[in-house]
Length: 497
Image (cartoon, rainbow, N blue to C red; front, top):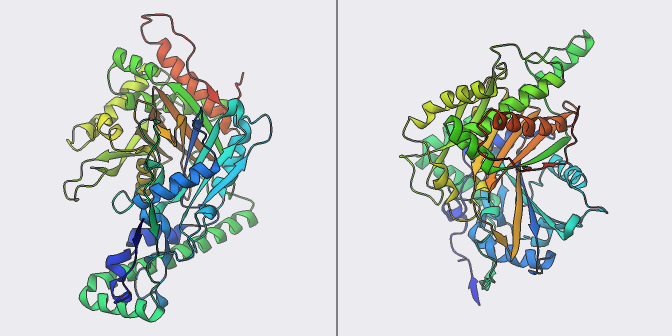
C-alpha cells in the first residue's frame, strides 16, 4: 500500500503551487451564484447493471479509486482574510466520500416521470461551499431493474485544464474487472490565516498584476450585489405601477429557485440520413431540429413566429487553442453566436440557413472535428458540457438561449461493469434565462436534456414532443430510400393534440 504523506515544512509558503489559487473568472462565478441561479452542471446516466452487481458500495469503491485522477474533488475553497487575494484550493481534512456519494430510490413503478421530478429537485439545490463542490447520486428502483447515476459538479470545479469532470474518469470502454489502486490519501496540512495573509502579500509584491485581478474580482462581487438590489427594486417598482416589462421571448426572464427537466431520446441514424440528403453536418441537423421544435412549441403558446423572426442562440463549440499548453482535452471551447430561423416555415430551408450560419465556424480552421472530441479518453461529454456552461456564463449577452451539443463515443461504456444505456445532460439556467438545452450523442443515439424554470415554463414538456416532431418533419422531406422503422422515444413527455 502506497501512502501519500505531506511534508511539514513550508506548508503555507507553498499554498499557490501546491493547491492553486482561484482565477478571477472562478471568483466571478461564485459572486454571481444565487439561490435562483446555482452554478453547477448535472449529468444523468441510465445504467443496466446486468450481472455486474453494481450497487452503492461498489460505486463508492469505484469513485474512491478514480478520484485520484481528479484531486480537486477532494479540495474545498479557502478564502483569504480581508480578501487580500483570490481564494485558494486546499485539501479538505474532513473529506467524507459517503457525504458526496449518496443513495436514493424511486417508489414503484420507478417511471422516468418520477426520476425527472427527483432530478429537478436535486438540480435546484446549491452545493455546500464549506465542502468539495460536488455530489453524486445512485438512484435505485427504476423500471426494468435499471439504475440512474446523477452527478453534480460546480462550474469552478471543472476547467478542462487542472480538473475534468469526475464522470469522465469513472467509465471504461469494456465491462471487465479493473485492478483497484491501493492508495491511502492523507490531506495536506491546512494553511493558517496568518500564512494565507503572508502568502497573499508576498505574491502582491512579486506580481502586481495579481493585485489588479483581485481588485477586479472584488469589484465584480460588489457589482453583482448592486445589480441584484437594482433588479429587486425594479421588480418592486413594476409591481407598484402594476406594469411589468415584457420579455423578448418566454426564455428571457429571471428564473425562480425551482426547475423542470425534460429528456428526449432520438436515433443518430436519422440525423445522418438527413445530412446525406441535404448536406451539412450532424450538428447542423441537431440545431435545425431544435429550431423547428422551438417554432412549433411557440405556436402552441400563440407566440409570434412571423416570417424572418430569429432566435439568438449561444452555442459553445470546441476550437483548437494554439496559445494553450496541450491538455488531455486537446482543445478549448469558445462561444459561437447563431441565429435560429424560427420564422421560416420550411424545415429544409431552416436546415440550410443553420448550415450557412455555422459554416463560418468551420472555415476558421480552428474547429475541432466531432470524431476528435468523441475520441478523447473517458466519457468526455460531461467535461465538455461543463466547459460550455462556463463559456456561456461569460459570453451569453444579448442572446435568447444557450445550447450545448457534445458528440460522445459511438460504442457502449461501463461503470464497474454496468453498461451505460442512456445519458442526458442537465444544463444549468443562467441569470436572465428560463430555458437551457444540452445535447449528447452516444452509442447510436442523440439525447436531449432540457432544463426550464418551473414557474416560467410550466408547459416545457410540450417542447420535448415538438423536438421529435421537428425531426420527423426533416425526415419526411428527405427522400425515402427505405421504410422508416419507429425511432427514438420521448422520455417523460406526453403527446399533445
